[in-house]
View 1 (cartoon, rainbow, N blue to C red):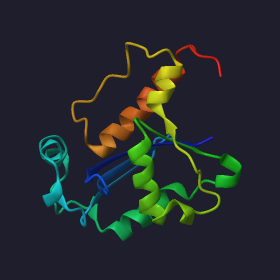
View 2 (cartoon, rainbow, N blue to C red; view 1 turned 180 degrees about the vertical axis):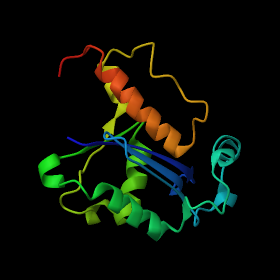
View 3 (tube, helix red, strand yellow; view 1 turned 135 degrees about the vertical axis):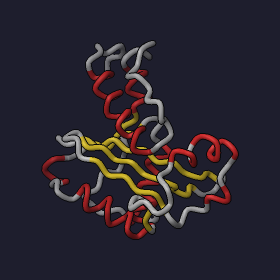
View 4 (tube, rainbow, N blue to C red; view 1 turned 90 degrees about the horizontal axis):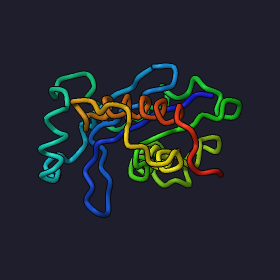
Length: 170
């Protein structure tokens, strides 16, 4: 089974999630990273300005692309798998916002997601709770809040947590 580990950096207005960047790492170590040229960076909160924007590549970098090209890139990155047969899992840490951002990016309203696309996300924080909320986690990277760096960490955290015994029986 293929697993995808995603992370978004975004501007949250309280009513809209505007993606700034997306990182996806697959369980077979492929990677996708893109920054949204259409993101309204002028609306970024002070926290995003301080913690996220400095970690973005220079604006001329090929990672910067319009939203439609990001959508094509994500679809191409994930399409080599047979969704019906492989039933891949998509993981994120504190996954709610990342999941909504991914679904809106790919389809707009969730009802327009392809029939075969997963209708849920797996949450690493929930996995940690089921594993007893361990005190130790995968080491945090120095460039946390870069979407690709965080997606890589999500994969490492998943590996770390899966090696621990279950604390809660399902």
